[in-house]
Image (tube, rainbow, N blue to C red; front, side, top):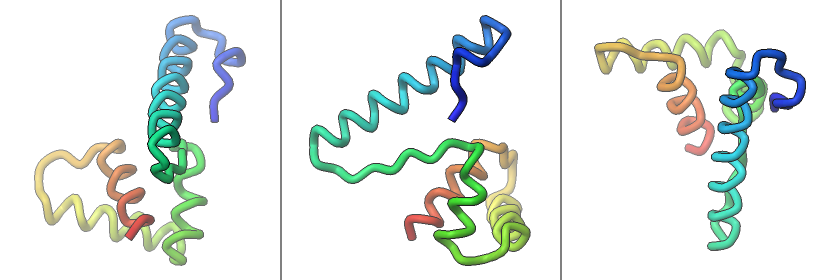
Length: 90
């Protein structure tokens, strides 16, 4: 996870802090309702996916790219990340 204090640019630091805030608020709200939650940041998603899906990273990326082609239209990084996380849960 990015430590906002280590980010030099104040604008980028604000975005990093904002992301941390949203993750912590959501995780806390889920915990208050006894709903299991795991926070995985983009930096560790690949390693976590490899463990959960038990396939090499290249194969995971190829499958995710194929999902995007099947859907058509833009398939941005955040959509690829969401699809990867959903696959991990399945």
